[in-house]
Length: 172
Image 1 (cartoon, rainbow, N blue to C red):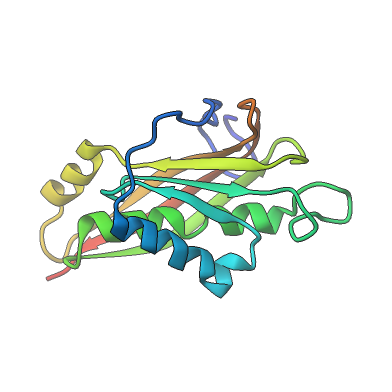
Image 2 (image 1 turned 120 degrees about the horizontal axis):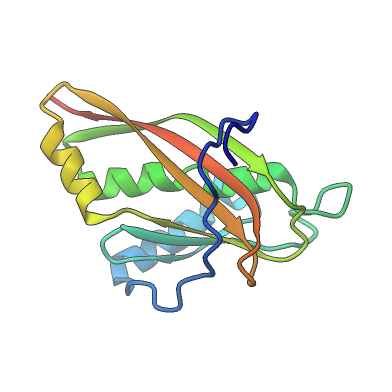
């Protein structure tokens, strides 16, 4: 997807879902249930399926049903974007802790194929990503980080790809 009009300039990740996601803790299981009850997220029709105990892995699903279907019989693009919108920001806020400010800065989504089955997205943060943010940012400094997430079906077909840019600042 190089030079696409939406700005997504990396290839989407076509890998199938992980069969061995990191274990959830009681705390992240409660966060997952709370997240799914949040009216703004619930309205997308999506659900958070799994949150790793260290908040470095999250899996969501967007079912194809009457709540997410659009007029042409595919999953509504707003449901797809709404499902992935808050995830990376929440993950970074939870892993970096109170000494950092994290905000969504921009996003670009590219719809590649109509979704007519349940779609999934997996989000992960590498240990070196978190350590790099902690090491490179002095108090008061900020940086932008870009993350690509793909919405895929059970077979690994990519239906949409979204690039999120997040603003990260170490508080003084």
